[in-house]
Length: 184
Length: 246
Image 1 (cartoon, rainbow over the protein chains, first blue to last red):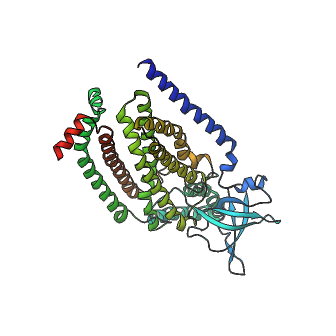
Image 2 (cartoon, helix red, strand yellow):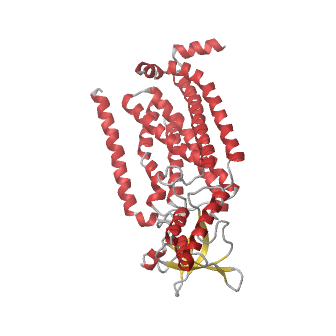
């Protein structure tokens, strides 16, 4: 390679590396601002802003969804495996909202520690399968939980609601975790 | 092999060879597109949660892949143009920008249409969506900068530098769903552990990805041929070509 070309190549390499380092530092500095939502554990640790609105993400705990007597407000719990936060939301929930599903809610904590949401978004996971496969998965974990008895059923509830690492809220991990949890 | 590339880099040979390739690439693109659409819309089963709405991903996901792929092609071609001063590399870089911008726009629009019923929102400012939007602006910036400078070669150098600076955004888009909490779901196909997509759904996705790649090849060659003719309009071979067609 002739010297002029080599010089240009090195210059370009340095430029790209320099920009990458600069952006890397900037992103690192703004890391917290780039998080789309806080997890229930972070809320429990007091990382979420107490006096203004923020987003809270987690899996809807199985069996926690209740309609309040006024008929429009839904009360449910979201969890990230370690901590749980109760959410109240008045309005229409998205189609994908169901127990065990990952959701992101926008709103504020009130004085009692209940999260009053003004918007609830469903977080879809990265798994795609036809209904028969989903049924088969569900069936196999029902059989397991029946074999595990009462304790097993309880374990399933907790595990499948809390499966997945924080942030991904994966559905499949939840299922496999429940299968582990229910082994007799 | 090296000689082949050397020849290809000369505008005259490029014009002749690409003219032969385009019909074949176009036919292959059409075949893959039809097969992908048939598999995707008629053969693939419905999703257990999303029903039929998930089928928009057969356009959305390949379009999003293309937006990243074309940007890399554009930046690398621009870099080659800068270092080796190869005219054809500059032409390929700028010809890619419009196709890339279109695919980015398509990915954003299809994602938005899917997001409303599934998430409950047309748009959220999470890391994945925001970085993809920045990619669209980078493409538009490249196109605008190229057209703002009168001299084609100076313009190509300036846009190549802009394209190279923007490369930093590509890993950010790709890893955004892993580095930060986002509403957008994580990767499905490139995940190494358990496959999280049904085989019958994966086939049309890959077919469409190949079709989009071929589509890009056809469009970028067509655009590059026009650019070659414009830049070389005063050379004897272009004049001969024009005379031949008159």
